[in-house]
Image (spheres, rainbow, N blue to C red):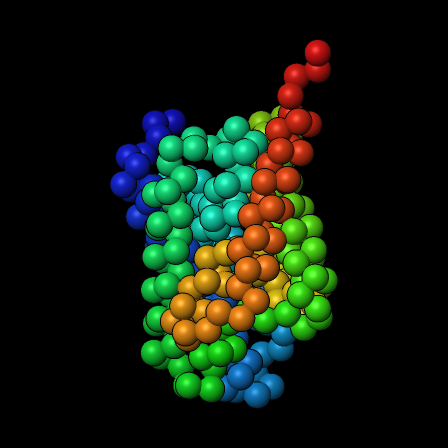
Length: 224
């Protein structure tokens, strides 16, 4: 299948990231503004299923990264060209900023800081959890979206990838804030004008993405 033009892929990354984040942020707003309407599990559903739906919509165009750590990890795993990283990152951060901006404008001021990731445990605990969570995320993505040897490759990718984020947000989120995505953390923080603990939501997912990409690259190498 012919690869879509780079500009179209960037647009898909921008719109897909916007949709993914906006659905997740709306879930957070519902949990804050409509007490009892949605639980923490519901918020995880917004992010996990929001990601799955955007991959169904745009994965065949751009690959459906919607996450700078995913783009970096796939490049380290030799499944994405390094020269295209800046454009993808720009599209992802732009889509994220638009989602955070719209969510902040639409919902009440009480929700503004709720969109910003914050660790519940120590910074060190959250940092390690973000690394491990993102590393595992890259392993899942590499298998279901890039490895044709896997019988579940391709058609099940959106379900597996979205399902992972739902699971990780549910079980790791209470400790680290459940980002696994620098754009998801930076976008609302920039809109709200806060920067506390942002380093762990940038460095943690980046390191996890690199490690996960390299691990799967090694495992997929032909036997010598």
